[in-house]
Image 1 (cartoon, rainbow, N blue to C red):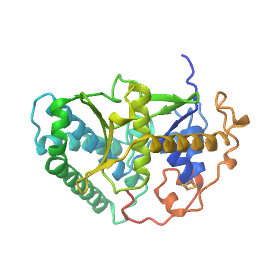
Image 2 (cartoon, helix red, strand yellow):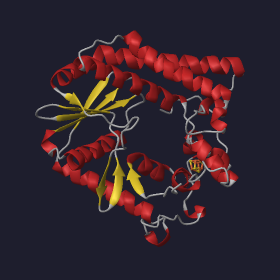
Image 3 (cartoon, rainbow, N blue to C red):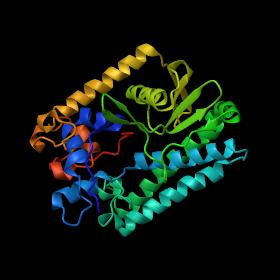
Length: 323
Ligand code: SF4
């Protein structure tokens, strides 16, 4: 079987990891590479397993994304979808994940079988049964709020686009990951929902956490993707961040100045990543020694990170809103 190549590429999430903690970027992109092989060193296998853990915020995000995308596709096809149906789609996913965690299948196949970080690290330090109850309560509450706001506040704004447009499928089974290149570097971009009408393209990112300034950069990268991959001129691109916990629809301005700012951001980030490669060679893509990837001094980052046991960092377990 042909060997996979660890290809150098850039994505918003890689840039975010790199700026939060270069060591985390190392574990994610290099230290875990090949961890699926039986013969891999134990540390690499551990890094590969830990990289695939998901916390409650990420899981709610995936579940809501599944439910919302399914609802949007059905409504666009002329069907109606109720809150209960969408809730069931999201809940079915979370129940599946829950059982995967209980069965510990992730020990053998961490990519296909979820390990729930909050339970793995016993972040709910209130006894086994109560911990599980608290985890379930959190999930249920956030899921309900997000989907209620989708149906009550967001869907009415989306309907005119759905009535006059077509959905461009992004990601999923059998669909290639979306990417484009800048200066020979592959840039991955995976917008949540893309709707193309006669005179514009609407790109929406569904958020199930709190508002962050960097989200605007993230969707602007999607704007560049739409231009490069689909040849859509900047003036026809509409970007929106939708925060489902409070039902906010935030339009993100997109024009040529902001476009150049985003290009600059990507280029600078790529250059910082190249500094950590032998000979700065992106074709070779061989990292410097792990020690060259600095560990963050911010223990709050460590408290949110999947790799604490590899870095042997201790942190205070706290049930705070880290979304
Ligand atoms: S545990 Fe801390 S130092 Fe280690 S990778 Fe994570 S954030 Fe970085």
